[in-house]
Image 1 (cartoon, rainbow, N blue to C red):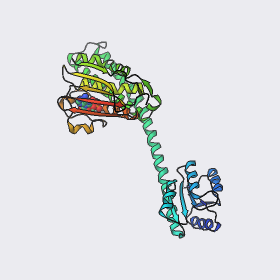
Image 2 (cartoon, helix red, strand yellow):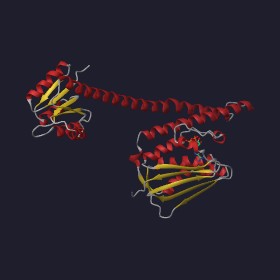
Image 3 (cartoon, helix red, strand yellow):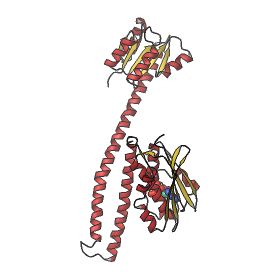
Image 4 (cartoon, helix red, strand yellow):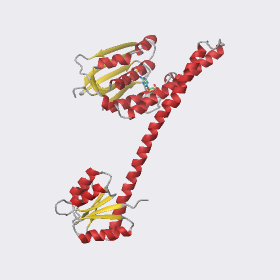
Length: 365
Ligand code: ADP
């Protein structure tokens, strides 16, 4: 393992030398500078793990050195040696990004303890950074794996089932047809799950903020309704839209926002009753543009409301369970809304219906 590197910056030679002697005995590599400027020059040429700097120095003091070290590389740990260790000076020093301070006079053991603690922090920071990077790389690989290795073969299986069901491969008995239909339905569910899951990963990749633009709410709602109006009609559900006059445009990523609305509208249709209604309203409230999706459906039990937005959560109600679902829709909705800096609220009356309200920024905000 590499030796830990410490840079000692102190205008008093005797102080520098004694720190060096103590730390070298501990197997630490020590560099020394007599002014802040010289120390910073050395630090940029060969960054140390830790800087030990005296608070009181002519020209550039320890607080200023700590500030510059932090702006050069916030991962370098700075410890300030102070002659007058008052609480105020310690607080001031820590505010400038120093990790710790050492009041003078100090014994060799005190110096060792403080430096060791600083080096340990540096090591832990490094390890957690490496773990975070490793985790992000694994997630990226996993997404690629899912997309190519799972989705493509499943798409192929789907095609084969369709071909078999069209009798091209020979006539099917009633029983074979039913089994293949069931296989196809299950596969559709699985493909939906993978697509939802991929959507979720894409939101985490944080691209939404780069795609924000001003869009009229009406066009987002129209885009979200494509296809769903037909589903509603088939189930005999009345679908209405009402947009307040002179409503300002919203600041959204149009594709993601359409997905939010279509998820909410599709739930409102899915968890509705025959001949029910879905009312979509867009208006301005509390400085936000709010889209309410109100349904006359099953409603949600009070105790389930806190869990609605969790990944894979599905209501316990047996009417809910009769519908196909992955339990990812609302988790995706919430992530997208939060990535926009917005929020989502739910009001529900169990057995009567629910209203999901999405709050997003106005474009001129
Ligand atoms: P899914 O619909 O695939 O189950 P969602 O994340 O979209 O997943 O929804 C999670 C759960 O929230 C649903 O299983 C259901 O219990 C409840 N839910 C969502 N929207 C409604 C709604 N409009 N009315 C009643 N329950 C709802």
